[in-house]
Structures are given as structure tokens and as C-alpha cells.
Length: 389
Ligand SMILES: Cc1ncc(COP(=O)(O)O)c(C=O)c1O
Image (cartoon, rainbow, N blue to C red; front, side, top):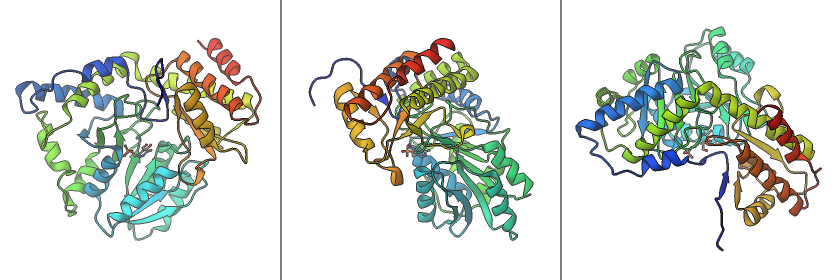
């Protein structure tokens, strides 16, 4: 690749840009993870993590990607042959289904059109139809990163309660935690799965499970063989701030700093910032005369916007043109929307001028790729940002 001056624009919906403060924090000598200092260091992180998940319960940190944290949630609470209810909101719910099936879990998979979130009515009707209460867990992806559609977890919980069904509620917040408001305790979530590289503004490499007392009770009676992912060993060691195996020490330095940043800004301000940048992005899309994939405005994602390219225009060609000319990465279409959409990530360490640069790159790319559109998307976003500054 030829030399490129200036900073790369990493505007995929995660991994997100890592703030300089976090990079500096990671760039410190590795410490003894069994030494006296480490226990206190971990306990401080676990306390602040609870504030971000909005839970009084335990949060577990794995040296893993998000997929590892998914697997951990399943192997701790479920056994082969157990049934779960999952919803096809997009590529990530589809992958979670495949992972569950590889573990021998039986998945009742409710098909979807990749343009809507989970319907609470469908949750309720499927649970009501399960007279024998064979469904052990309902698994939902909060922010479907492949589509830019958010499912309403509070409504899912209400539907489960309305059906008086005892299933656990497992939620993937991999691309929402720290960017979109989320309440583990208040919404009665049993396992919240997330990872480091999106709203938490870290490099990839940490996976998390926030777990309710009900989930811990389920794990205690669950006979599934597990070792690396076992909550029991983790919880016992975490009580004093240690781990059953070597944790990702330097990523935890970064985590400590990222949590400080989120709490300094204030979580409500962080969420408002994401909402505002998402609205500005949608105004640009509307001005271009293009279409957002998400069909229900109540389900628009504040983390990313997925945009359809007109019929016959390859979205990956547009992405390549933008990368080659403006050194900006945008998210590719995944699974069944490959080539049909591109995704703009507006999450994490991000401000008005980052969005201005991002949308400028897209608007110039649309022109270079000969994609039919109206000019003026950037201007629409800038007006909105100036009005709401
Ligand atoms: C919603 C969602 N779930 C799961 C994953 C998988 O996470 P990982 O790639 O870190 O294993 C991703 C990754 O982007 C995601 O966006």
C-alpha cells in the first residue's frame, strides 16, 4: 500500500477508534497478575463495570472476543438438548444460533427480514405456546450490528413476564454497551454478553458476561462440562480481584481508563451524543435520497447506520473507492445483504468533526462511484449539528 498521510478513518461499527488516553494506558509495563497491587486494580474495574451494565450483580471479564463471551453465556447456563428461543434479526443472531447448535442446544429460530428488531408480541406468543416450559432461555441481540436495528429489551422482558415463563433472558450487547442506554438489572436480564472493541473503546480481546442471581443458580445445577468459561472459578477468584488464569493485563489498563472516560463524560451524555450523531447521519442519508435499512424509526441504531445502495450498484465497490481515495474504512454488508449495503459506524470516541469528515468521505465516494444520489447530505448533517450544538 502506498504511503498515506493523516490518520486512517476507522468508521466501521467496531472495532471502534481507540482514544489516545486508552492507548497510553495500555502502553505501560505489564504487572504481576498475582501480585498485591493487581487485586485492588481489578476490584476497581469490576466496580466501574457494574455502573456501565447498570447492575449490582457480578460481571466477568474473559480474555476473549465477543464470540467467546457468547459461548460462556451458553455453556454456563444450558446443556445439550436444552431448547432456546432466538430471533433472526441479522447476521449476528444467525451466528449465535449456529454456535448454540454446535453446542447441541435446540434452537427455536423465529425468522425475520433483517429490517426489524425482535417483536415482543412474538416473544410472548412463542412462550405461551410452550406449555411444557421446555424453552430454557430467550436469546436476543440488542443492537444488530449487521443491520443497524435495535431490539427493545425492556419490552422483551415484559413479554416474558406477561407469558409467566421462567426462561432466562440472554442479551448480546456487543455493539451497544457504552453507546446505547442499557439496564441489566432493571430489565431483568440474566446474562448480558459484550466485548471490548465497540462502545468500550478498547482494542478487541476482552469478553464480558454480566450475570444475575438466577443465571448463577442455573449455572450451579448445570452439568455441562466446561473449564475455561466456567463462572464458578472466575467468581471465586474475582472476589479478591484475581483470575483462575492469566488475564489480559494490558487491555485491563485500557479498560480502567475507558471506564473512567465514560463515567467522566456521564453515561447519559454518552448516549445523547450517540443519538445526535445517528440523527445527523440519517439526515445526510435522506438528503442523498438513499434508504436506511432499518424500517422502524423506533428501532434506529445510534451506533451505526446501514444504508442501501440503489439496485445494480455494488456497495463494496463504493467502500473500496472510499478506502482507496480517502483512507476510510466503512462496514461491509454481511450475509444476505452483502454488496447491497454499507455501514457507517458513529460510535465510541467520536465527535462532530469526526462525523463531518466521515460523511464528507461518503459523499465524495458516492460521486466517484457514480451512485445516483442528490448532493447536500453533508450540508444537512452540518446544519443539524450546528442547530443542536
Ligand atoms: C452484535 C454482535 N454480536 C457478536 C459479535 C461477534 O463478536 P466477535 O467478533 O468479537 O467475536 C459481533 C461482532 O461484531 C457483533 O457485532
